[in-house]
Length: 156
Image (cartoon, rainbow, N blue to C red; front, side, top):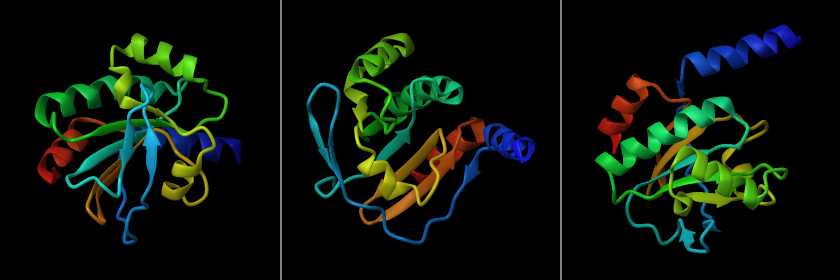
């Protein structure tokens, strides 16, 4: 059973998956690590969420790539890196932000996992990238590669 789980995890990391979602995205609000509030109900334009945790190796690779892509191509589209893992402290996230050279203003701590539970039905998977506009999902991927970036570019 452990081998099957490992193989599935490995395949997810090697081949990012685009998920099709029929339900509307959940509404939420959250404060970033600098105390600025983001409210999805008040968001008029598209926004992108990336769920991560500080010891996730694929996340460590993905976050700088996604941040560079978004800040270069879509600087006005909010990008939220949300950590739903209880064990990751705010101090851990601050160190993580510095290590990856990604602004702390992009990082959010979902301390009790209330937001992530709205996006994950059952087991969480990392990294997960979600694009939302209005009352619909634009995309949802597990992982990032050049093809995923090209698809995101065509969808935003």
